[in-house]
Amino acid sequence: MEIAGDQPVFETSLLLAGDVDRANVHRQLSRWTKAGRLYQLRRRLYALAPPFQKVKPHPFLVANRMVQPSYVSLQSALSHYALIPEAVPVTTSVTTLRPCRWDTPLGSYAFRRIKTALFQDYRLLHVDDEQEAFVASPEKALLDLIYLEPGADSDAYLEELRLQNLEVLDLDKLQHQAELTGSPKLRRAAARVAAQARSDMTEYETL
Image (tube, rainbow, N blue to C red; front, side, top):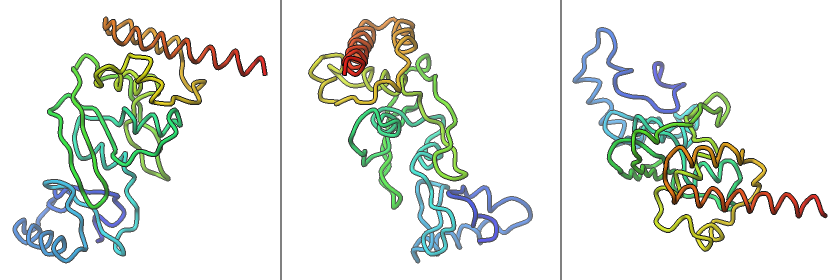
């Protein structure tokens, strides 16, 4: 409690520093987990459970710590930027490692794999009080989604997304990033989103 009490999540290495009985630490972690005082999120990663929990872990921070390297993207980031209207029940990230999913007491976390060359354009954001997490830019979150989902460059798919608040997007950046990938699919989708955004802007100015 003294060492990890102020941490949203912590790894066992935090408790094993210095002159400690490693076996005893692992026994205590096992007992606290079985007693419901600790949540084990994955191997060697824990969070204190209420009422011992002083800081409620933000899902984006938890996602970053579950799999490294990774950053929050796709629908989770789009919802964070209010680019889609729905709340997202699963926190989704991208990684260069194998895809995986973790269902934990703090929520569900999915990780989609992208090529190393596309692992870019994310930033460290304040997500809650003093917590920070790596999150894709609005443009990259949309491009990651289109890259990973079959048929996501179609008008039907983009309409189903119900994109909103498109003024959040830097349209020049969106199209430039799509061009850099060399993917015709991403170029088509970026052009369609940019056309929709400019149409919405023209309609708003007319009103």
